[in-house]
Image (cartoon, rainbow, N blue to C red; front, side):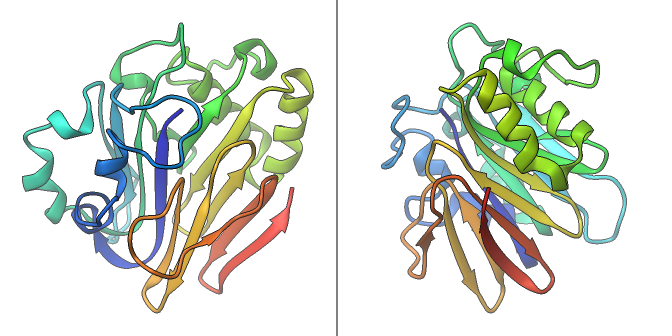
Length: 227
């Protein structure tokens, strides 16, 4: 269910992160290699970033397949930021199909993406959720509980739904948090920054994050620890 990525580093365009890499997120929208649940991510896409000049995060979301958007290729090179989240969606059965259900979701300055599925009753209702879909409810709950308590929040949700897959990306201007819980997650660091993604592109240097682990990225670099 879904593929996503987050960038924390030097200014980089959405085109360089999403469209240009061989087997990058655009290719993963129709031909993912490591996606165990679902075969294609055609139910929408989204990009969110923190503007380098300051101000609130901005988003561009759609309910169409990423490959069908005729404007993305021309606009993406102009969208440049040090902090970017992008996702392509494979909707769970019974979930809403409109653009409000596409990640990233936005709460209190955090851009949030969920790769997986979870029973909505295990998450609970939230007036802050941007959609009735499971991912939006989970995003709202995690931020409401406090992003730095994400491990405790996921443990509580998983206790109510043991089959849940709870891979998350949470990106503020100062911090990136990424969880691996039931799906794939990879990490690549170079002199320009840190990229976390559901699956690697063809660039060398990727390392797989173990299941039930948390990646935390700050200006000091990444750390990986058990959840």
